[in-house]
Image 1: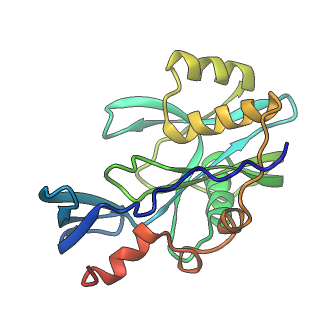
Image 2: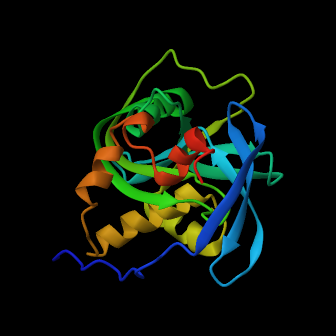
Length: 225
């Protein structure tokens, strides 16, 4: 399939003039700030922003029977149990690829022979700067000696891909990274293909300091309005 033309951008896409930035909360996982702004239509206001220190990474790992490796765990903010692909938060010293290799071993005691980028997403972009890097992996083999974090209670289950797709459509599987990964693979299998932009594809294998997004880079220069 031929590359698509770029979507049209307005000549002056940013309507905001920031007058002040204030850090409200900082932790090893998230940070919060409030920006004061003036919109070009004359409105003034405040914009709260949540920044994620870690990079959201996931892998749709398929075995030889076309079964997806799912991990079940209790999701504290939602107060419900959730079945998801293997996921994790990449540290500042890890590329998304390094992170998800580690997570596959820790959560499912598996390694994969073949890896490729599957999809990229901005999650909840109205209030956070979180990015998601999703991989497709196959050629699975067992590994041992890895343990999940102390506060995690995980179950591993293998589910046929077609069943996962139907569970996504039914809303039974609702985790964002899992939904994106399942639908992205289904689109590919349906013949809808489009290569990632080369600059974006590189970011799957680079550490955050090598490829900060504009939003994540902002935290290091809050004084710059």
